[in-house]
Length: 192
Image (cartoon, rainbow, N blue to C red):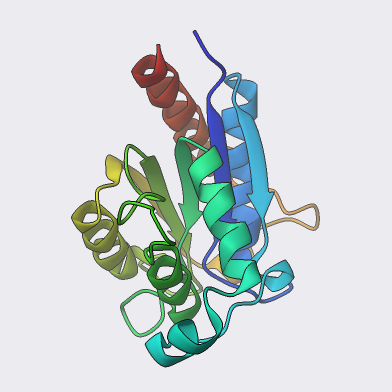
């Protein structure tokens, strides 16, 4: 059985993002299940707002090419999705839109084909960002990603994490670990 390769990221660039903390916990669960995990922080890979004129005049930006290469090199995606106004963040939607653009000789949506994803969220609100997960699930599913039914929203994010970025509630910590474990297990089975 080959080692599953998983790319983990949050749809936030904020330095102290709760969703960055959350996806790192899931990534730990995937590693414990035997996966090779790459963590990506979008703060380190800024992309311009998607613009077909910019693409036509200057080509695909270098940071987009880097993101696309990372997407192509991994079979699984762990994505923590902050909720903005009951939906997906502009940062995450922009990254998806750029990654969907084919380069010369490349089939469309190559970055999303045969990918398996697990999505999660955390929010200061009572629903933990679950409303936004409906939208990200639909977007990813429509571009060919198999989004596993397993997901989790952690409410009251501003109270949920300790000073080390771990969840204070042990059951929640285990549930997020299990998301990473489940993705690693499914990707390994599909790759064998």
